Length: 300
Ligand SMILES: NC(=O)C1=CN([C@@H]2O[C@H](COP(=O)(O)OP(=O)(O)OC[C@H]3O[C@@H](n4cnc5c(N)ncnc54)[C@H](OP(=O)(O)O)[C@@H]3O)[C@@H](O)[C@H]2O)C=CC1
Ligand SMILES: CC1=C(/C=C/C(C)=C/C=C/C(C)=C/C=O)C(C)(C)CCC1
Image (cartoon, rainbow, N blue to C red):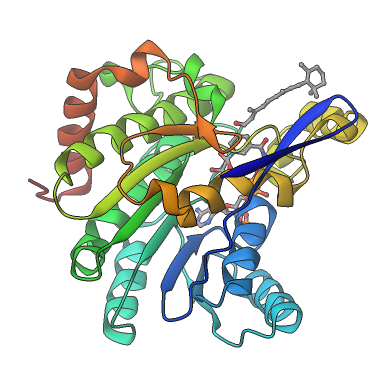
């Protein structure tokens, strides 16, 4: 359940669940700032053991100490994860699986937007590589542990921007044409399609997979665009705070009424409209097999 309230002209919703998470292990990617940090803070407040999976250890340690001090939960742990490098993703997963016996909630939150054309360590276009392929590989590597600890949840942070995306199988890495806004949209559509296919494959396992739009949130996401950085500053009053932006992620992670809900897209803590391309099962299946090929994995 969510509650409604409003500030100015922006309608906002808060996850109302009082669920406690003592004994539960959670991973939040990109939790050193923005929506991820607020998600980690809330889950730590609920008593979970929270793994802050970030590429910059210094920034992550600063966020973790702040959360530990504020919540009194000392089980907020930093681990290195660079989603732009499959070697780092594999090292993270290997270390995690060796150190932790359990995993109950995986929040694939980290993301980049409006990057100038660039590639990941493995030669993937940056938006597709970090936002989709990195999380696809991470989920693959951790899935057995989630299944063993079921009921468990996978929460993928996508965006309303998925409406503008398409999966350009003929030019996935933007080598023929590249627009950084569209590249973001494509990667966020990939998040929606991945969740859809993942949920279908996980039927009967008690591991759910849902995807969400957090709202338009005043965060560092716009850092690669000078114009957007200024627009975000000027219009910040109309944007959600990171704490408000984290509410739908928290809702998907803990709400009791979602125990058996899977494959759904949420916004403002409620089901929301998915674009026709985000409901295309054939594209979802093809994206799945192409992602496996690119990553050199077999995921049946
Ligand atoms: N803000 C908004 O309005 C909206 C956000 N979203 C989505 O919400 C999610 C969170 O974004 P938000 O909090 O706003 O953005 P921020 O830029 O504030 O946070 C993004 C996080 O992702 C991390 N990250 C980026 N690249 C990598 C990488 N290669 N490996 C590991 N971590 C990485 C960042 O780390 P570092 O600090 O080191 O760069 C940071 O922790 C994203 O998936 C975004 O697409 C969706 C719709 C709207
Ligand atoms: C129309 C408009 C704005 C709103 C932009 C929005 C709402 C952007 C949403 C971006 C998303 C969803 C990004 C992440 O996925 C501004 C810049 C506030 C002010 C200028 C006019």
